[in-house]
Image 1 (cartoon, rainbow, N blue to C red):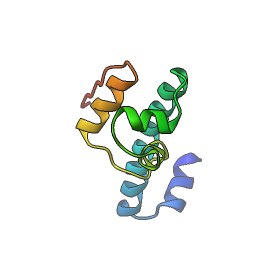
Image 2 (image 1 turned 90 degrees about the vertical axis):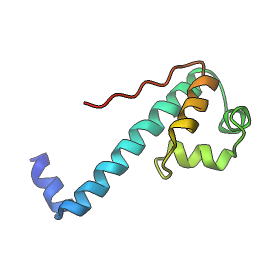
Image 3 (image 1 turned 45 degrees about the horizontal axis):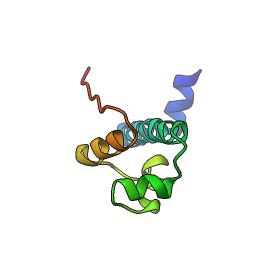
Length: 88
């Protein structure tokens, strides 16, 4: 089962927590990637709009970098979107 697979891949709570954190960064990165592509922007163009580098956009989209709420808001605004954060 999938649960067994996860237990095998991430045997400790610490390793599972790190995997969960990475998953959330990847999901967020994919949302940014999708919105950027939908608007026809390159990573470089998005980076210029929010005054950062193309490599930072690449790290965000690939889930390699944590992102501040301020940066997320800049990204959302530059992609003509709205930042919505909820705790469930």
